[in-house]
Length: 367
Image 1: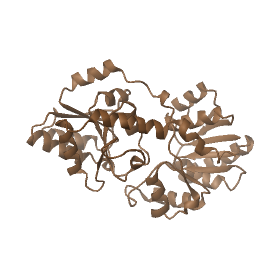
Image 2: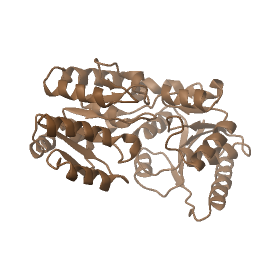
Image 3: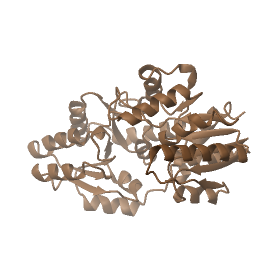
Image 4: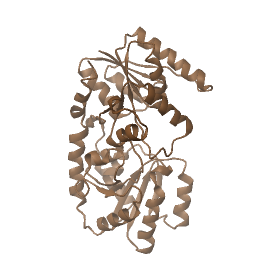
């Protein structure tokens, strides 16, 4: 089969590149076409003898932008006799659902976002979802939560939706540097060290986490520190909160880091309070380094592979504050075996998301 992966981004995404390489290893002729210029994703795939191409259009006029991409994709599929297109991310998917009417290729639309009753979606995003849902012949979703969103909330017939979990070649992840992890522990000495990796946006609910830490650190005098890795529009607001609350010695916003795995390795626990996710990679990475995670129920695919009290600690999605406080206090007082939780999470992640486990779910599509 001639298979094209049509993708918006040029950044490495291990789940996508793992599938691409697995398809190639199955004997398919696989190529990548992105809407952005060549960067690290292209370099990684080319190292594995997978051809990559780009078509970059300046987005000064939306109609011209999407029409240009549409015409190019149609031409590309015809010239290269593409049998199957796996289209990823909304900006590529809106092009793909129209291109399918003008070429013989099968188009599989891969959905990577969820929502909570439409929260955090602007008008154009909602309109694009409606168009994509209407014209897609098959939508691939990565979790039960996204499946329910597309089927129950957005009204897409279940026969048009296929659940395939993300598949990872975990050997592509760097091993943690133990010396660097020890250095991080020494830089942020405390009894309970937390690391949160998530964009600084409202949906990640940093304010709830900060409020709970303020209660535990300021009022109850617990020796807890939090390292926040990422950037986003709330950076200044959150930095100001830390200063006003006198938490400068307990909460540290360090921006983006290239060695996230070392920070996860150094942590005692990884909290993530997201109210919506598709399939979060950070929690899986935390599993790779066998760490205790705190996540919300009914969010993304957490319920698909994490069992409360066995491989992670769940919080109520609508009001996580009290559960978060209880879990942190129990961790602090060593009433929870965080090592056991981390080991169980590792085993669950490996069993659920290893590319060898997932790739067979695609076989029926690639015929």
